[in-house]
Length: 502
Image 1 (cartoon, rainbow, N blue to C red):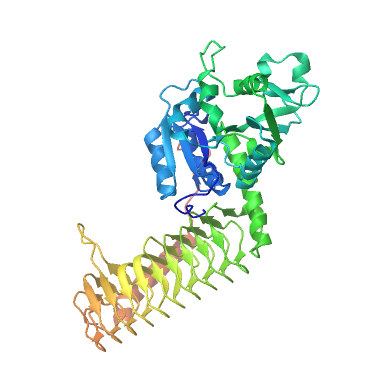
Image 2: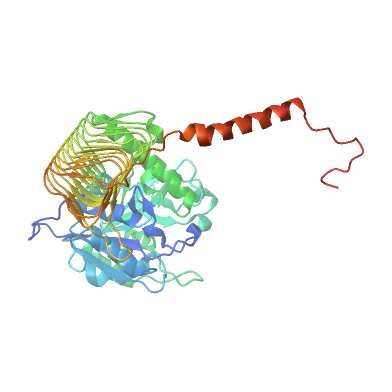
């Protein structure tokens, strides 16, 4: 995501984008409004806001309706410091009516770019080209179009013999000759700011629903404006595809994923079985990193150079330094790893985990709110929560920080160079001093001084002759019973005996 533009703006008249995002999206069959459905890890409407700002737009006004507060909250949280506006549309009475609701917040714009919140593949590059084409042509309005192999359902772009755009006719209203036209309306458009208010307020409904259609402006400008209407042809028509169903969401997301994988490979990232790898929109990956099959990189994950992420690993909103090795089927969320760290296989790093340089967290280790100093290691089978682990500490297998008393969480501190033996329970709050040693099987309930050995076990007792007196007689008895059964098997039941079912 780009940084907010500097205060003061540029000398040209500001450009405003109006994003139409008020509809519910009933065909999604969801309690969540359509534009908030995730697309590459973030609500699809955020892709439009991001693309608009990247294209050079100065202000984005979003027309909201269903779940307006939620939509506004998502956009505001994602773009702090940017020029944002929200225009409520309590009744959805057409695209023209939607832009009308935003008019007060579009005042002073030299150009108004109208977009749809359900077209997340639309790129900043395409929008910048559309704006540039509009400026160079000096038209009153410029519409985006594309050539459709099958134009069924699309509004046709009707031109005069000299090529001038005359109007857009919807498929249902088109004549046979008009239906043969393959140039169709892509939806997005640019309107000269000084003309927007007069044009929109002149719209009248001509349908049973009483809706105002933005596309009617094309015919109006073609007839009344000396500048006329221009058309910008999209290089890649799929950018204009809207999402109305979950199937369409999956199809477009796979298209976006395929492009993203190619982009990252071009930037020096290697992938094994690329088609199985998922990479969200805000992920960043350093060169010479290797991604194994079925890896998922989610959220705002940052990965350094030369890392290796093995098969099935899931990494969500984490920061990885250089040359980190995440082994197979490890799960990491909101964790930070310094350079040279090794994790897994089958490790679970939860929120608040911070691993220093050359730390090793091995198989079936779970961490939460845990900070490891450099070169510390917990190689296997441990739970380490709400703890600080110093430089060079060794945590043995089966160690647990008992951090929860049923009401509150408590902290465990293990200082530099301590050695924690296997099967140890550290009952927080507790501090293990520098270079202290905890004997295997110990339950630690008090602080351990620096350099001390903590040993807390029941005294061992050895009972001499136990085998001869107890185990051996039982083993011989069992063996004799098995031999008797082998020599004298039970008689089979008579043929006319009733079955169990009977």
